[in-house]
Image (cartoon, rainbow, N blue to C red):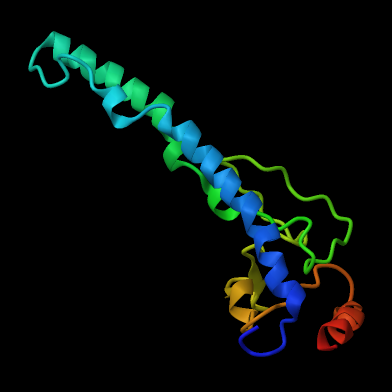
Length: 159
């Protein structure tokens, strides 16, 4: 919008896209808040004896059981999607499943573009990252067929 080409639909899309992402993040925060740090405090935790050892083992088990979800959330951080956005073209592909921990890279429209190492032409060397080929603004990613398959989409974008 600031550059004068976005159109009203771009601004209108913000709430439709971000609201589900915010709600998912809030839902995760609510789940994670059910076990606050105070709930991990156990009598004898600092005792230098067998009771202290047992308390620390119990606290360790509780931390792994109750707090892993709070800190192992790649699916929430990277797996957000903008399904149903008025500015995202639905190509009919099935989005990957969502999970708080598991992030599944996908080129399905509405999601984060996948990280991918491009071939360097040299079988012993890794090429550049796909993200390094993206320019400023929007990028159209063609994942199958010839690059010319993007021609109609590029024409619509130019309009």
